[in-house]
Image (cartoon, rainbow, N blue to C red; front, top):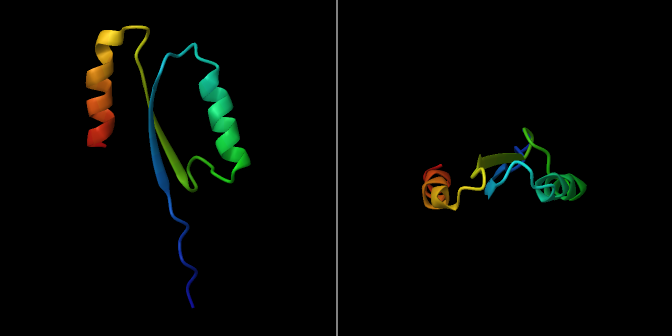
Length: 64
């Protein structure tokens, strides 16, 4: 009997490149058993501290 493939999850986020919280967030996901390329795809868009970009970035992630 063939082994069932592990479900892959897609996560989208908007961040500033200088936010250390993203690194901690990805580390915690690893601790919980998620690994990019295996069962997790992280789509990150960066706003570069320009809040006027947030709606377009959110719309882009929603389309994915």
